[in-house]
Length: 363
Image (cartoon, rainbow, N blue to C red; front, side):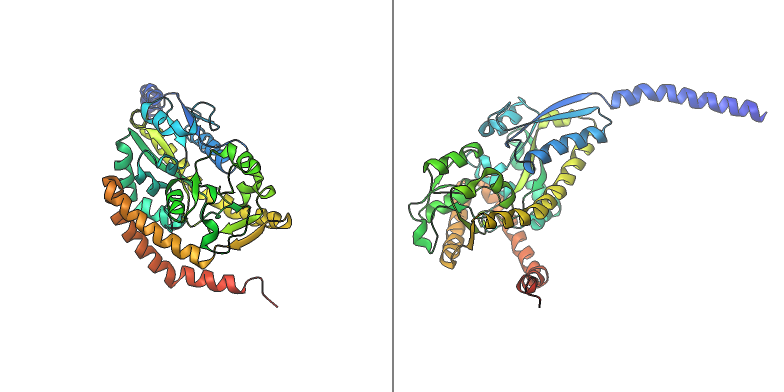
């Protein structure tokens, strides 16, 4: 009797397995996407993160969902990446949204604004402060769904051929700096230049520009900017942090099985953490190397910072007055920033400032 029950049960189980297998196959189709990045392969922190994101999605889906990352310009010119995703030419990209500031100034909120939130604060705003809903509404106009997938944290303020002793030294300076930061710099007398990554070094070398900002020590060293302009300033106040975005075509996203959507989101969240860790671990030794090779590191003079702060707020008011999308996000974003800064001032910044004043000075 027990044997008959066992065989009967085994038969039912086998039957269920037979029924379930076709369903499982239907739920996990083979999907292949292309990801257009804005980075050369030599920038392993940026392009490497995009490539690792793609590999992670494949692992999480048992190789069924494959995404191939392409270096900047290989399949889509970086300037056209947003349109390419929205139109479905490629399924997704890996970019700084601020690169498309000219299309809609509100994209700056996705990357970071002058004197904006740091990486942790920005991530908090996106994940738990209402930022995700605001950004998804913005991108929805372009048939895109956005995902935060990395952050370089606060960057450096660029390389300059001459020393910046005061605000007057910025006037008439031709500098590679774009987006909102470029507009603020313009108010300070700088002549901002929009130059792709691959052209930064030759532009400095030929004297086409007098200064250039990129990211920070680790990536700047790879571009060799210190070989041409030795004055290296901090901080890069035009972005409290630089958040990376993967823009995904809305239809391509909707067509994905829930399992694949979850895998993509998990991979993006993982890279948000890992890219930040990569830069935090890589920038200190890179900065030491740059200094050893002649880089002169300094802070912007106080009058530059004060003028930049004032000009930034003037610009925000102007942009909010011209662009309803910017205005809609500006209110809740600025309120969240105010609360975050108030909290950080109490504990985080207080400890950081004290620690910075004593570490390295031990007897």
